[in-house]
Length: 81
Image (cartoon, rainbow, N blue to C red):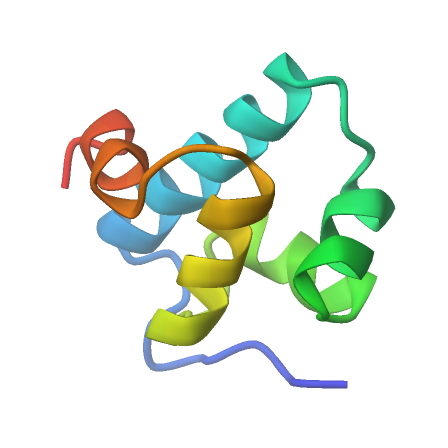
């Protein structure tokens, strides 16, 4: 299980991105565990992403956006990034 990235923990950009992922997931009625499974990541890592505790890799973001049926650009825009 990945550990939180202390260097980036509580970074405003990561907090905003995590909130955007969480709100999109909830709008679609997906459980955190379901989105994690579909995106091929651990649920605990998904939780860390949503809490802004992980500096997420591009391919993970691509998979999350795909499973959320939103473009990566739209997800970033939703996070105001």
